[in-house]
Length: 158
Image 1 (cartoon, rainbow, N blue to C red):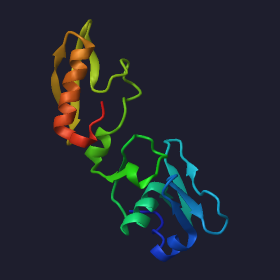
Image 2 (image 1 turned 30 degrees about the horizontal axis):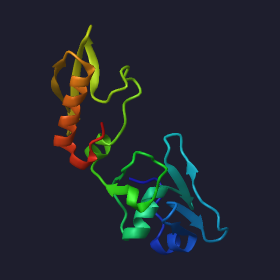
Image 3 (image 1 turned 135 degrees about the vertical axis):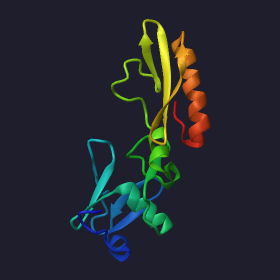
């Protein structure tokens, strides 16, 4: 549940324009780009007391409906060109995320099992799936990449 209700379509249309080429929202009053980048990389816009992510406003302006969840195809959370946005489930959105910060190897889905043995795992629908132990990082990474394509298709990011 939102803390503050979404503004009406007329209010949004009266306040901002969408520059599709640059993927930015422009104030109708000042002609300047609106929004602030958050610590997570999203652009947030304030309309009245409501805080709204810019990509949700872009989606609304282009499609006429508010999205449940959107995915930035290229992984850049501030790139709000409509061609870079797609509706996604939470699971699909997570599949298109990068390597976790606590991953020592820097390779998505791969960790050190013990010594020189590498473990590949993938998350799907909230559960971890063990893909196997491998003698090389490359083998483990390939196993993850294959599973990501199988489970997430166009949302897979390796």
